[in-house]
Length: 292
Image (cartoon, rainbow, N blue to C red; front, side, top):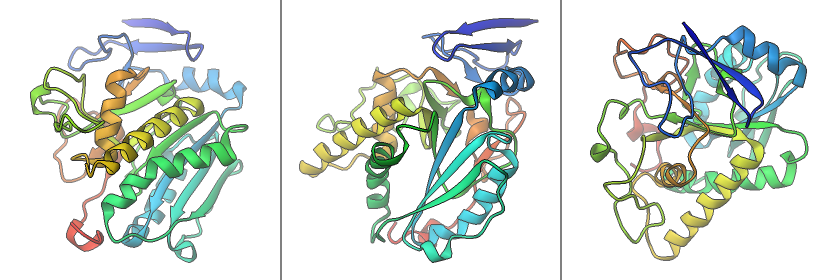
């Protein structure tokens, strides 16, 4: 049985197939996207005539540069295939960015950033740099943006089913956990603070996006909150991920992507996960991070 839902925000018909083993809609009526909850051919046929443009940002700083080639090569196979895409790579080693053959309408753009002695500093500046990129270059010609972790690779389709005004991904480590177990920021003095009776899902910081103007507002707000915390010598427990979760609690996402859209390779696949579309690769944090 198919249920058709019309979301006026994106002027798009969302087709929800019958799945009873997972949550497919949030309490605020946003779709939760799993395999077999959408028709990819229908969605592509609606978005193709719109000639949409999509930007994706990744940060390949320090030893994280080693993950960039797999990220880009698998993105060419699975990420918005057949659509106009611009990849923005922020790196302190522009000479080490691999050459990857890209289809027509898809481009790789490199932006230099300084190296860092703490991975937390890289995390902290990400919102600021994305905000500045949008304001300086993207506001006139990009429709949607996704901000993704470079130490990840694509395994299956990530396409038009993920589009929405404000889009986030449920963290694969906590989608079966009750709210009391979510690792929100618990310091009341922090701008990222979440009380124990607050929160909907726990979202991962390694993948989020939406309409360009919504991503701009998100990054601008999180950057401001980050800087306010820093002035008070406060660092949220999971840096930008903590601030992202606070933002999504106040500003409900219009589309929520299931853990299929950022699995963890060290985790065994559970029965409700029918496909892994994007996943964080196994790595030794002590070896790749400047500090742990």
